[in-house]
Image (cartoon, rainbow, N blue to C red; front, side, top):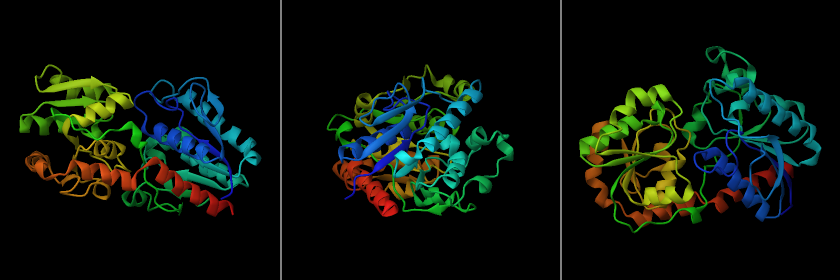
Length: 357
């Protein structure tokens, strides 16, 4: 197998690897490390505080996470990142981009350079594109920006279908993955229900609380609260409830322990979830998932084997009564067979080789 010179263009919202929240950053870090272990010459475009075995190009002096007050800063560093990659293109055999905020500019760059470019989409079409093209979110026309100039990877079939109106040139489906050594199959006593993820309306933490209270069981919720208005209106009223506990943002070690002690992960998403990394994190700990049917959920959860796919809050509540039929060892095995970092890195490596040669 030919050793390649590979550019990995990471999101700039968190350092790599992230210390807590940051699913896409964690994926890019693990992919980069696997490729370096295989002997490839990898260059990582990320913020300066990142730690990597690859050659680091420090695009921004610090993580640049988008919020209402820093739009211009995010746009500046996102454009700078792609301009540096364009200037350095001859140092690489292939360029692989993951920066969702700047997908439109990545496709434009791919049209202008003479190097094969891959884009892994970690998002569904949203208002994020407006950051890159300086338009109002409601005026962004995704068909204009998602083109066939780069080979594009979706994380699931349902994810791919959200871009059906575009002229994207699709490569194979390649899922997200885990460094399995970070997650332990738990034999601990199960103590509560778990919610892990961004405390935002599309993730449904308020629905998770509703399910837990209907069951009459304690729920622990972990994750950042980026949407302060939503938190104040929908979640803060439960802060003093005896069955509800907010535990903040967890690192990888804390996350494994948190998931491992849960009866189940509640995943009541209310948007076309492209993948849902937290689902396989839970399964890696032997913890089944009770989820609403949305996005990639039916592609990841095997109903009755690794969890339950539900069509209502009532169904989620009733699924709790059937958890005893789930074999927790099989939950772990499902992740080992499909979502290991080594296995998925080899999928990308084979794709790179096919494109370059």
